[in-house]
Image 1 (tube, rainbow, N blue to C red):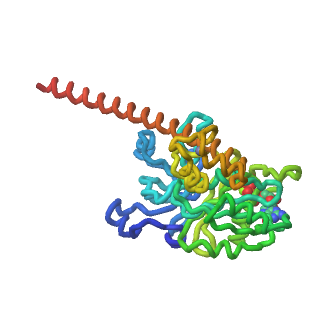
Image 2 (image 1 turned 90 degrees about the vertical axis):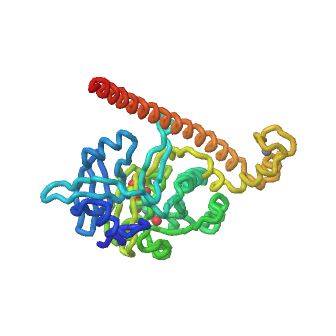
Length: 359
Ligand SMILES: Nc1nc2c(ncn2[C@@H]2O[C@H](COP(=O)(O)OP(=O)(O)OP(=O)(O)O)[C@@H](O)[C@H]2O)c(=O)[nH]1
Ligand SMILES: [Mg+2]
Ligand SMILES: [Zn+2]
């Protein structure tokens, strides 16, 4: 397996980087799995367990990077022992989720991803509001979203489903497939460039692992039936797994996301709701709350039916959530800054003391 087949997408040559930047023995590798401080690495040499160096552990507590699945790292090979990860290389992208409900800042899920495959099942799982949330996740991380309507074998009106989705995902590629029968799967695989990394997003039971197995032709991942009454999955996949695909690209399988917590920041809202964004520019007042103001364009399009009340309600709900998550992030940043200032003051005091004593 070459680094390019492992999804190397750094803007510099890997060997040159390692030769000039790092001690000779360090090797580039990609994090393919992680659990409680233990990692699995894929490199041109093979698959290895790994741990993290003391320095990296220390730095991560001070706000430095902690390796996540998808990361490229510089690791020290060991004979008959886990490799030691010394550095996390700069990330080309980072997929976040928000943890506002726990009062925590954004959390990194995976790194160095080019494409987010947003899966939804065409059984009872179909839900455009959830799609909007996943679209926000991808957009806020700068990752190209691709919408995949799976289980086409269980659905009769595929064109209607596609039309419904294209309303909430303007300009986004939509694939109607069946991971079970293989319908549309080759075409989807061909839309991913060799060397790219894709991640599977969607709630439990939509067929993420089934699709990965179908792409690879090997039963890499365990799958399990959904509950018949509501098509809910059983949370079969419990860890993030990066697996190289036959076409020379890489796919990350993820556990089903129950409630998609949104990361902070408002910019991505405009990407997910360009229609609402454009309409609100046409309101009479720049700070229109779209409730009782005169000449409110949104009230108008809601009345005319151009904008569905569900989409607008979801927009408002997401906007609040994103703002709240942003506050969590800012709070955390403030705390970190305070902690840092404290450390610096302590070090300064010590330095002065030592200097005074030396006098
Ligand atoms: N009919 C039909 N069933 C499918 C299709 N794709 C997946 N399934 C079934 O849906 C169920 C759930 O599939 P999984 O691949 O385990 O779903 P998952 O998204 O990985 O679920 P978690 O790992 O729990 O997040 C399994 O019984 C699959 O056989 C499809 O295209 N058509
Ligand atoms: Mg799974
Ligand atoms: Zn308005």
